[in-house]
Length: 121
Figure 1 (cartoon, rainbow, N blue to C red):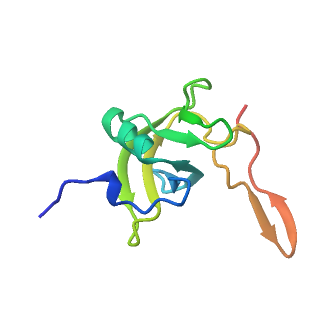
Figure 2: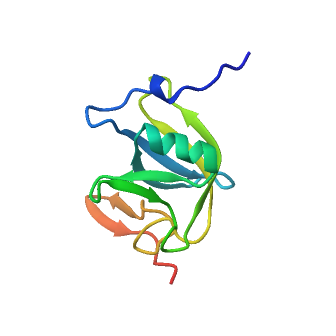
């Protein structure tokens, strides 16, 4: 039987943050990694617009608010230790600030870095 979700049951780091992986809900592609605090978790669940915590700005960051490259929450999953989140999202445009579909565009092959994807624009 389902239980009511309580964001305070998540295991945040000493800064009050939890790592979050964004994954394309349709393809399963891993798009990016970012951070949330408890309020960002609540805002994301309430609005369906993925909201992260920007460590560099010390402020909330609604994905796509300025770029138009939005993420709509399809499903939030909690890992077994409750210290990491997986967001299954509908991504509009590139997820990475480098204009690539994914932030994970550099592979290490035979000891060399290989760029595997070009910017979309």
